[in-house]
Amino acid sequence: MQITTDEAIAKLEDTPGEAYEMGADALAFVKGIHEVFKELGMTSREEPNLAELENLFDAMHCELAAAALFLCEPSFARVPDMLRAISVGLSNSEHVPPEVAKGFERLAKRIENTRVKKQAIIGNMTKVLDES
Image 1: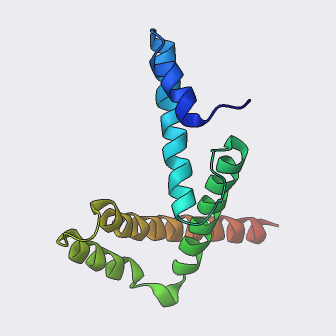
Image 2 (image 1 turned 30 degrees about the vertical axis):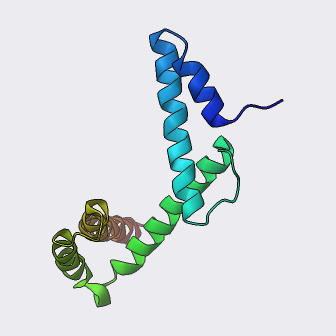
């Protein structure tokens, strides 16, 4: 019989020792992340699966990287400024979690960093091509 994540956390919390506490904290974190993905409709499992969570993290990271790369194109030069303005507007709202407002600010920074990195890569490629 397989136990649930909640049961495992309860057993670990009831056992004295720092390692058990750390294990309970780790399982609680995994469960929390799983619940976020479940609320987003990215999984339908009732219990966390670490392999699936790893794939979901990879997928979200790749989606974010693709969006940042797309939005760093010159035709979207004003996007970071617009995202920062949205962040400021949302930060004053009592209906929007502060993490969401901060997310707009972080996305603006990611786009700018991606733009710089992309320009550096293109510059290096041009230099290599010129030398050959």
